[in-house]
Image (cartoon, rainbow, N blue to C red; front, top):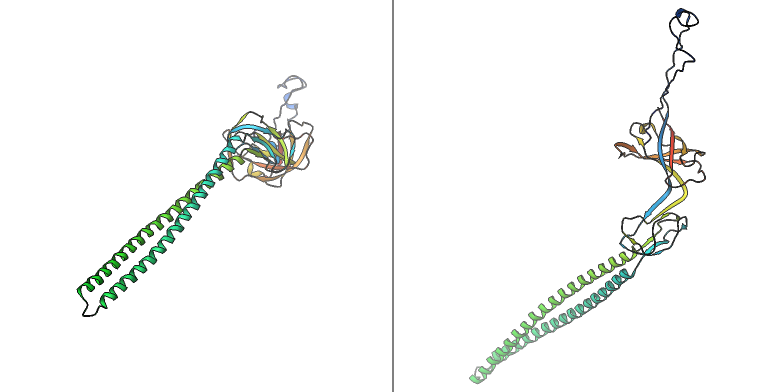
Length: 334
């Protein structure tokens, strides 16, 4: 790393011949001219830092799921549009997963339909049981009215018949009530069946969404219009998540990002400060620029705390490439 520092002037005195000694050639020491005093070196107002050339926008892209590369649709240096497919994985397994998930959703939907039909039937049966209870209760009332309406001179046989009719009506009422309780339990069970079927449908729907999302991750697409800066994908190779396959750069503009603006000098650099930029790969190019931003947070790099500063070049020299090294000289404050 190039260390930032104010340049120190090293003065080297070179004698034109032999050292001037007391009593030496040309006269006595009393006649020798006094050496002039050396003025102090004023502090430099420049801060020098290393940097890297980066495009105004860039993206490093890979796949979201592992798979075999089935298609590479672009080449290095090719211009692409936003949303354009760059690399695609083999979709056979993913398509099978999506198809199975869709079949599970269809089956779950049928299960919900059956459960809803069963609940509707149970509700109807309960309504019928309620009507049967009402009818049985009315039958008891009629039987009791007949029994209670027997004349005082009714025979014992007539009384026994009336009592038997009341008993039969009450037995029918109890049976109707038992049917009502059973129909209520059936209705509640059918409602629980609907809830379970709906939960299964929800699970199947979530599974389909996951399968479709996984299938969508089989394609690497350009997030914005730009140029393919690097491409490390070949048909038939395996691709894994986390591995960069394609780099896309928006080369409509460039900037320089410093890599070693340390904590001893960052306070002297301010946004808007003028900058002179040179490039290791373009020795004949020197351009002007401006500091556009300075990071508030410093990161540790090789034991030093460094701050990222962004420099906007006023002009772009021919041949500039992503990740070229640059030297930035900032006109800093005191």
